[in-house]
Length: 197
Image (cartoon, rainbow, N blue to C red):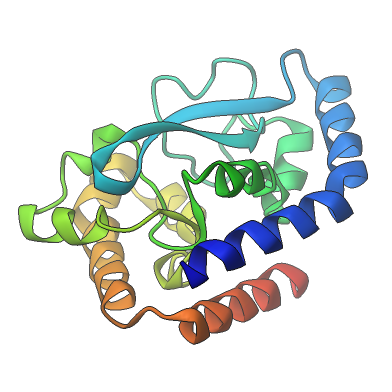
């Protein structure tokens, strides 16, 4: 209950403060390439329930439907999208997902069903027992994921066989010790990464 109240309060404050900048970002996206400013994608949330996550669109329209992974230098990324991704600003619309209860500020990053199918049974039950988050220790540890995928001969194989198992272990470790103080620490580390880029 404390975590949920914290999420609601912080999301409401940030949306009030950032509504104007988010409007400018949406206009920037629309002027840069054809298509809507927002992008919605199916992700797997708490208890395995599928929901649609919100992001600012960073790729050409319909470009992400076949391959959900994105490597650095991906030709599908728009000029505006590259700028937004570098600053993690494409994630801002997830504040609405926090308000709706589909997400939390801190929790395992939600995956597409395609990759949740690769979760080992024991870890699947743990990871999907909590609300997914905008950030978590695994996301921070893999913040250069795009670079690694760009160097991989087969990005999807690299993700499923090397990155995903590591992420799942970090997420399970987070869940085992999660509390408000650990969440605040993760948010602080996330802010430090975003603002020192």
